[in-house]
Image 1 (cartoon, helix red, strand yellow):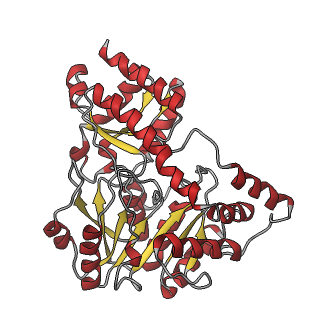
Image 2 (tube, one colour; image 1 turned 90 degrees about the vertical axis):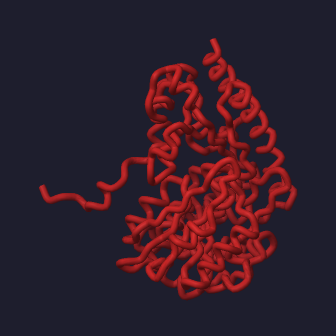
Image 3 (cartoon, helix red, strand yellow; image 1 turned 135 degrees about the horizontal axis):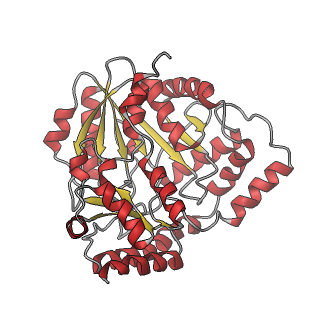
Length: 389
């Protein structure tokens, strides 16, 4: 048998999805994978049903229905301060996952490098390799998950094609400040590199934090690329409708890659997404309040139990320390401890090492998600308190 693509040998399966499978086998509480355990808003579901009944069941325009692209452009203008031409700057994709890979494949040439902050969402490393680029990692350090400007500057160079940012951030909950994003943008302009921002958690913010779209910063009109999705905003992670906003020249390339990757996202769900994007501002404002209650609920339990959690300012994840548990139970790494946590408490987490290029940086960490009903988090708390017995 001839060998498979060697790039696929350089990364493993999704640790997040793997922990979810182990959790299901144990009948546990899944605080590993970031999907809500409540349903999509009724207005959005009704729009999907109506679209199916009205015959939106064949191929849509490959790069997205006109209705959805217009809704994305309107929302981007109102919330993100981006002036977006729906005809030449938006590509609708099968989720932000495809959107990120399509964007990278569209811009990368052999020899290019991509800067990635770590801890990172686990897809970014494999996406970089599959696009043909070489990753350059820059570390975010707790408790505020800040980066060293000198370290970041040293990661840029003539081969740098792009930097991937995720704000609000998974897995840390960090919300990048305007000053931090300005520093990143200045490096992008100096080296003529794209700034690709994954904005999937853009409405989930706490403690007065502000979401800033890097593409809206001065001088970033030709270098800013925005990846987003309806998954988190509308609690519809299974619908797989996302989009890429990019300058027209980049969008032309993104659309070609997207066309041959997936042809297009589900037509009726695109129409439903458009309806969601036109919900009143009160819906979006309510997201932060909803998740703030869940954050405080889980954070309090983790603090009580000595997990030394880092307080997130956005998204719906908490990174904690488990060194005290590793010492108590005699485990040398986070993966073994995360598996033991399922056995001991029925609660699934994600090993911290899976978010780093150098596993040792996260070997005493695990990540919890709190996008769950209050009742679910209370059950998780009961399970975790068994560690005190």
